[in-house]
Length: 413
Image 1 (cartoon, rainbow, N blue to C red):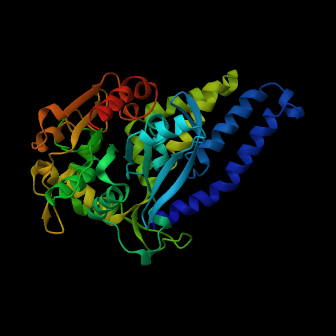
Image 2 (image 1 turned 45 degrees about the horizontal axis):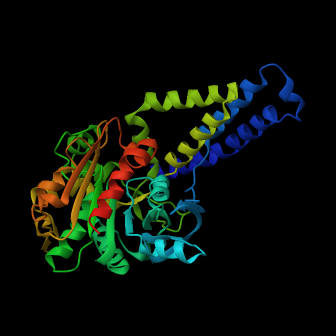
Image 3 (image 1 turned 120 degrees about the vertical axis):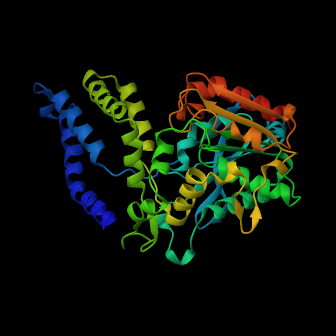
């Protein structure tokens, strides 16, 4: 019923948001007589804010058309390499027309970026991908909104996530592959590589874990507290809802994106309130660059997806309540996940000093679990002054963290 009420609310707001947008443009358009009346700028800004607060946010595109690498600006084409019901493996193919650049691009290491499946779309990693493309061939996991997956395509569990990662690694080839997991996928990515190592399969050259809950018992945050303060049955009864009939995935059980978005906002309500007030002031004062930066961020932040109920509940239980990976008791289809069996893959962990989602030490816990990797092939970075999102996007990511990640990959080719 909650999902249906949300859809009803969205439908009722649609004409109001359209009216707010039209009114804002009327007061802002210089050819309109209303734009010259006293207070027109403030009215235009207010209606624009109302429009953005009420509108629906769709998945934005990656929109990476070109990148500068090896001293040249080269075009980039987004390609779907593997398509599965709940995920697409994307490649961002770089092109060049001179022999020297072609050879340099061909020799670049291959990176698989494992995007989080925790509410936002993979496009949240646009800055991560664009930066990596300067010196790497880049693949990305692009998770599908569960409400768009027909019920006949079956269920999706945390174990399926692990199998997807394994399939993508095999498809690309582990020989020159470097896996980067951003936030939530650190756990299933480590499991995927561990199971391959236990089976004697080739494993990637390196694996980088960025802000992921490998051991959520360490320095628990408000996110961890929510998962442990409520029972598994509470989550099952209170946050799982049925996709309504106006979507391809009708009747599928999901954890809705709008609930996750409400949780995101509730963790820092004052910050979001200030951001929207500043956006209003920027519009009034004519600071269009700052206003555009606000729009870019919230176009991404407010675009959320539904997660399959089975996957979400597995994650709550296995990662945040029972800590199965950290305790060495996680089994997938009867096979124990043994990170200690990994020996040929170098390990880099990255944490943000000010991360309020994944607490200090949660990602670094991978070093203790991966006891089979020699110490010389392990490295940890704590990014000073970085919050959760700052370790993979923004100035600190580009100028401080990425150069060290790039060097790590280069050193272990």
